[in-house]
Image (cartoon, rainbow, N blue to C red; front, side, top):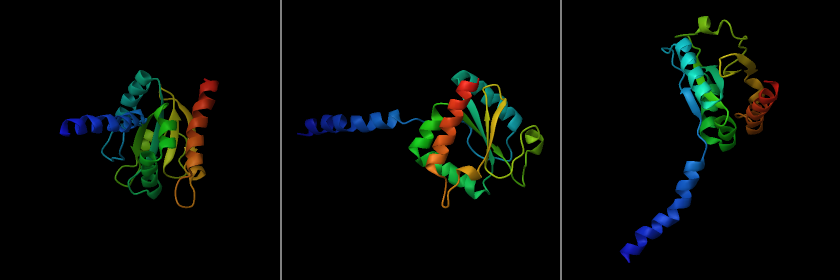
Length: 163
């Protein structure tokens, strides 16, 4: 009887293992807002990864102090639709903006940031293709799933046709 239970459990768990493997995963070059990081060096590494993986770059400027930045992290970890929209097209790079390090020198050549987090979509060479404020993606209690999914999918489609 014991010999039958182990193979049976294995067979029954295969669909669960396959489902976990099939889930898309986000690709980060920098996954934390860290005031000690060098965004210039991070961008060089992110560009190399984006070229290798044939993806665009989603650069998110924010900080650990920012409530909407923390909500965005939770959304990226828990929302399969948003993850699917991002996972197929982007390498994500976080850039710290805080009192400890505002990275203003690095960000001086980018479009102005009215609020945090702020999204820049870059091509695989680091050229800015789109600058997106956060407020258009917010709901009353968090991010609007439809807005996030539509934004990432729409930007991917628009840029695919434009380039």
